[in-house]
Image (cartoon, rainbow, N blue to C red; front, side, top):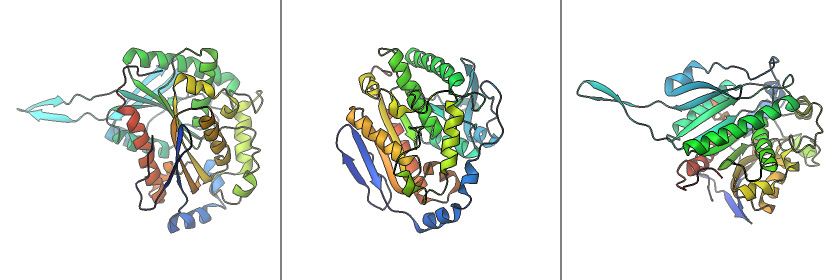
Length: 352
């Protein structure tokens, strides 16, 4: 699937196998200036806040979300989930109000990033409400998964596997096209949980697709290309990506397949027919491993569309909410169009 960017600058689209890569290397002047200004303090923006106790944190979505979206809270396998969908228009006929029926066939379960230690930020909520406004037949379900360090992977991962099994079953029952999505550490979770579920049950249900935005894919943090990127990344620092990896893995090895998806059985995604899309950035310490993971997807004949923007920072599409970087708007639009292709999927079998 070829999804070009819509900006005035040309993008390079390559397709050497089953993965189509859209590449850009331009950078707006104001973006470059902002990145330079951010470098001395950008790492402060990624600091985890307070520690959360055992279990799934119950969230309070910002009031602005409820102005434009319907928000429903529910609990699945002891994990809080928040379903966001566009508000149903109310039509007035002969003095009577009637709600226009909403067509729904696509659900995105979204796992937010934040070093496995933070709940959704205001930027996440704004990003997701903007997204759902562009996807009228989609419901976005925000998953409030248990957070490290109290709920490290040895505690949380079995719960996430249980959740995965239940939501896959629900999707089959409701005949939904199902996408698992996440940014950074959230992208790590959707990749790891899906591949581990398929390892345990190769013939079990799987999502139709995955969307991983700047995912963390290798907890070892030892890619030789990091030396050059450290000087350019305006947001992440080596100590941060190492400390957050340690907080999540806890007693597990850094190369355990359940925390480092690049070490998992990637061919399982091909066998289950899971389309795996994603985004990587050139000024992102997690970028080189993300590219290696994308290449492994291609080697294993996994289908997907990926965007790589050479001079952008970690998770720059989410910066759309600040209105600073024009590249964020273009990347957001690209992500939406990839997801919209899933929402309009008309196959009889909606989950693998």
